[in-house]
Image (cartoon, rainbow, N blue to C red):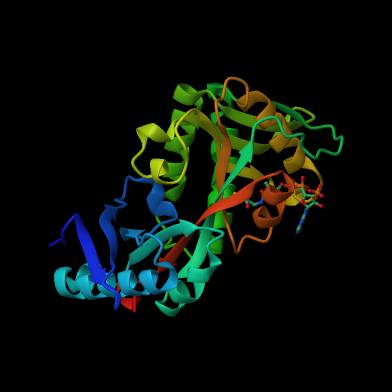
Amino acid sequence: MSGPHSAEITATLADGRVVGGRVYRLVHGPQDLLSVWNARVVWDFAPAIGDAGAAGMDAALSALAGWLRREVPTTELSGDTAVQVTWPSHDVAVFPVLLAHGLVPTTVLATRPLGLSTLHRSTDVRVRKATMSDLDDVAKLAAEEMRFSAQVVGATPRDNADELIRINAERAVYFGGRVYLAELDGVAVGVAVCGVTDPADSPTLSRFLPAGTWGYLGQVAVQPNLRGQGVGAALAEGSLRLLEPGLEQGTFLFYDVANPLSSVFWPRRGYRPVQTRWICRPAANLR
Ligand SMILES: CC(C)(COP(=O)(O)OP(=O)(O)OC[C@H]1O[C@@H](n2cnc3c(N)ncnc32)[C@H](O)[C@@H]1OP(=O)(O)O)[C@@H](O)C(=O)NCCC(=O)NCCS
C-alpha cells in the first residue's frame, strides 16, 4: 500500500500568516539509477514560506511531520525511506530549524559561470570524447565514483548498482555524446559523464536554476591510485572546454558536503553553492 503522491501542506503562524509547501512522493525503483544514492521512497518537500524565515520553516516542517504521521502508512516512513528538503545554501538563518527537525545537509547544487579560466597544472593528461568502444572504461570509472559517493552519503547498497551505472554510461555516450575520458599514455584514468539540459524542461531543476541551456557534470572520477596528482584538474579543464561552447547559461553539478575530495575540488574550480539538499532518514524520524 502506498500513500498519496503529492499534497499541499499548510500551517498558520501566530501573526496569521499562512505557510506550508508541497510534498511529493518520489519512488526510486530497482531500475532507477537514482536508487544507487537515494532511499527507495523519498518525500520531497518544497517549502513555501514567503518571508517568514526560520519561524515559517519551523511551522511548515511541523505541519509536514504531522501530515506524514496522519496520512502515510508506516511502511512508507520506515526502513529505506527519507524526507528531503532543498533550500538556498546561503539562507543560514533557517539551518538551526532544519537541524532541529532531524534533517542533515548532504548534497550541494553548485554552479559556475561560462568562460572562467580553470586552474590546471600542466600534466601529460589528454582529454577526449568517449565513444562506444570506450564503454568498458567509462562504466568501470563511473562505478568507482558511485562506490565512493555511495559511502559518503551512507546509501543503501543495491545489488544491481554496477549494471545501472553501465546502462546510464551507455546511454550518455550513445545519446548524449558528452562523456569525456582522461588518458595517460593512452590508458583511460578518469571520466566525466556530462550532458546539456534546460531546467525549463524539468519540474525539479526549474525550481532552482533559470531557463536556458546549461551543461552539467554528472559522475566524475579518477582512478583511485592516481588521485591527488593533477589528473582530475586536467579532466575538469578539458571537459569544460568541450562542454561549454553553445551553452546559454553556465554549468552545474552536485557534490556531497561530506566528500573530502569533491568538496575541495569543485569550489577550487569556480563552483559555488546555490542550493543544499537536507535529508532525514528514515522519514519517520522527521520531528
Ligand atoms: C574528485 C576527483 C575527481 C579529483 O581528481 P584528482 O585527480 O584527485 O584531483 P587533482 O589531483 O587534480 O587535485 C585537484 C586539487 O585537489 C587537491 N587535492 C588533491 N588531493 C586532495 C586531498 N586528499 N584533499 C584535499 N585536496 C586534495 C590538489 O592539491 C589540487 O589542488 P588545486 O586545486 O589547488 O590544484 C578525484 O579525487 C576522485 O575521483 N574522487 C572520488 C570520486 C569523487 O568524489 N567524485 C566527485 C563526485 S562530485
